[in-house]
Length: 130
Image 1: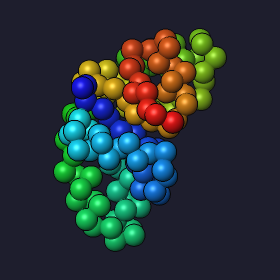
Image 2 (image 1 turned 30 degrees about the vertical axis):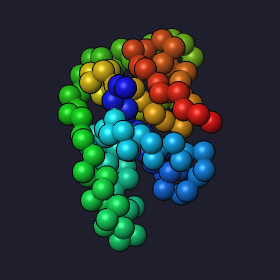
Image 3 (image 1 turned 90 degrees about the horizontal axis):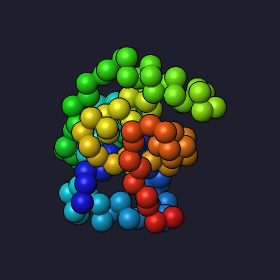
Image 4 (image 1 turned 180 degrees about the vertical axis):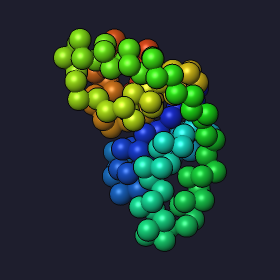
């Protein structure tokens, strides 16, 4: 199985105990998960604020993908989005897509715009059982 980068939107649903995201347990067991500093930066402040130190340690133990920002490529990704009528994608999400492409991994996200721009950008989205 390919590596799977789990977006913060999925982690949030998983931590809330959303039954639709119990399949993440299987991904954890098979050790195919990875993260990056951007996703951790989105999640960790809230986790640390709630003093969930074990959870913080667990997330930080997941393999981290190196992020190499190619600004010209991000600009071209955004231009492609705009040309396709998808002008609401934020730069952090484009960075996540770029990180997946660079590391040849799939993205697991609840955010529907990833599925939309995966139709015309080099991004492989993990299809989950919901």
